[in-house]
Every structure is written in C-alpha cells, then in structure tokens.
Image 1 (cartoon, helix red, strand yellow):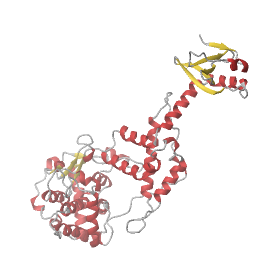
Image 2 (cartoon, rainbow, N blue to C red):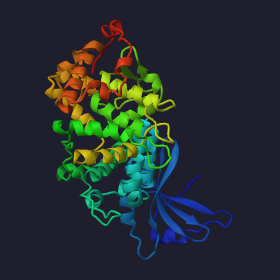
Image 3 (cartoon, rainbow, N blue to C red):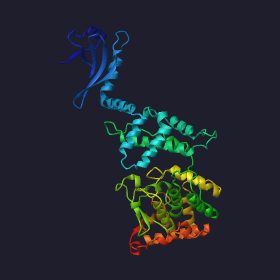
Image 4 (cartoon, rainbow, N blue to C red):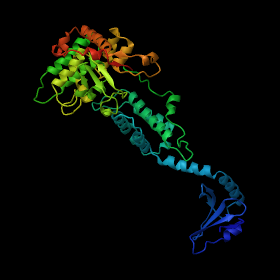
Length: 458
C-alpha cells in the first residue's frame, strides 16, 4: 500500500529510502496525485502521478530542497498538472515526435507515401532537393524551419552564380521558386500525415506561406518563344543538313534520330520530354498515330504528364519523322541515343545549338511545340482541337467548361494537324516530300473506318 503523509518540510526531510529498495514514492494527504520520489542515494523529487487509460503516468515537477522549496506553490502547481495531465502528456509526446522528424525524413516519407508520383517527377524532386535543400536544412528538425529560413533560401538560390567560363548566370528565379515550392510540398504533406494521439496534426503551420503573404514568388511566365515563320526554311533545312552531314571521324552519332525528333516536335506539338517515351510498339500505322498508354499499364516511364491514354494523331510529315528514325536505328524506342535506349535532353539541346547558327537565334528545346501551337492559331485551327493535339487537360481557372463535353474523331484531329502541317510548309517554302525525307510515297493507306470511329477528348 502506498505511503501517505502530510507534506511538511520536516516530514519530507526525515524520509529515507529503505536500503533494500532503489526508490520509494510517498504521497501527500492534502493534494491529490502529488508524490515525492526518494532514491536510495538520497535524491528527492516531486512528481504528479495520475492513472490515464489504466496506466500510471508521471509528470516531474522539481527537486526537494529543505531551504528553497515552497510547499504551497508545489501544491498549487500539482493541482493544475493533475487536472490537465492527459493534455500535458499529449503535448509533450507531440513535441518529442515533432522534434524527431528531420527535413530529410519528411522528404523521404513523402516520396515513399505518394504512390501516384511518376518516376520522372521523383527524379526531378530528388534533383531539386539534393541541389538546393538537403545541404542547408536536411538534418534540421522540420519544426525548426522558420519563415525567415524560407525567405533566406529563396533569396540565396535566386542569386546568379559564376559559370565555368567566368560569366554570371541570370538570376535563378525558376530554380528558387521550384526549391521553395518543393519545401512547401514537404510541409503540406507532413501537416496531413503526422498526427498526435488526439488525431491532430503535430505541425501547426506551413512557414512557406510567408512567400504568399509577402509576395516573394518570382513571376514564372512561360517564355514567349517560337520560330519566326520567315526562319522556318532555315530551321528545317538546317535540321536535315546536320543529319546528312558525315562525322569527321568514324564514330557513331545520333544526328539522324535527333534531327527526326526535332522535326517531329515541330510538326506534332509533342512536349520535349515526351519524345523519349515513344516506343515502336506505340506507333499505330493504320491511323498514323502514337498511342501512349495510361499510367499503370506499362509504368510511368512511358506515360504522359497526366497519366491518361492519349492518341497523338500525326500529319504525314510528323509520321515520316518516326519512320525515318526507325529506319536508321534499332531498339525498342523510336528515338534512341547513341549508347542509350532513349534520347537524352542534352542530345536535343546540342543539336539545336548546331541548327541555331543557321537561324540566327537561340533555340530552346520547347521551341518546336511553341511554334506548332502558334502556327495552329494562324492556320485557323479551333482552340479545342489545339488542346487535343497538345494534350492539354480540361483543368484550371481559365478552362472552357464546355470542353469536358466535347469529343473529336481521329479523322477530325488529323484534318486539324494537316492544316498546321500545310501552314508550316507554306511558310518554309519547302516541298512536303523533301521534309518527309523521301518517304511520302511509301506510306500505307489510312484505315478510314478506324479514323471515323475512334475518338479522343480532354
């Protein structure tokens, strides 16, 4: 049975732990839950003890000192602690759990738990995290990241850096937004995932919100780039000429498939990152289309941005670029690299650098897609058909809500993409068969029944 006495300084000073025990608990007869723990070594400490969910829980108050301890204050504190013991213990456990979770742990858990992330997105997140966040904040407790840390991170990444050639880069505004945006995602995920015993989040706020309140985000408008219609002749001829140029040494090059890939982007509007996803098996020759599978049927490596099945209907020129690349390469993918199964971004970038000399301006990788869209407007193609051709989803604040009800047969989409093809060739002043690499006469007859039966939507 527990020992109970009226706590006075004299009584507490006289208590001694029996030699056969390591410690004892002595309870106060006046204040419920107040106890003194006395150890064999003579240490004396006040605790509040309360049974919660069938188990004794302790909350340490302070050490007993015959000279300085004020028993009225100890009793007053003990009453408050006893009344709020469950809330106090939850708060302490929450704090301990919160302080144990580092930024590294939260990021790794986010990637592990988010099952629908594509491999490309995971790769991009890892690269951004490693380059900009890990070294600065990775080992710190997530709860220790403040609004000031967020603003400092954004400002630091924005600063230009020195290139190897001694020149400074432009302010890295996109990289800064991207890194801080990832940090925001880590916090949002952690707020939703980590809970205490009461089911409440152990993280109360997202420090990245300071970016919105102080309007620190950089404007990240898409670059307004396209090939000037007057330069289309130089661009297309440049792509063909580079592909036909023999290397100075007897070494394998990827000029032919890269040339086909660049012209394919111009005549199809496909995203730069999607050309490496096209397998030979995806090419439907009877409809002259590329059928990208939905996510899950062949892995995220070959699915598109929205993860849905998509029929990329092609005009003759775009289709011939596929045939040309397949004619000059082997392997599972239509556009491979020299020693890689898929074409790298750097291969396309280096090729465009060569062609830019004939055009007289810088050519980013997305310039083919941008030029395709701009030409579509000039050719009179409807906004809905442009969205279908470019695989733009029906989401966002500016979307036409009626698009969700619309469908288009493959024959209608082919007519739209052929209008764009005609406009590009007319602006370039080039014969269709020249750009088709002499393959136009070899094309099989289209399956008109399938073209008039199959349909797409957004």
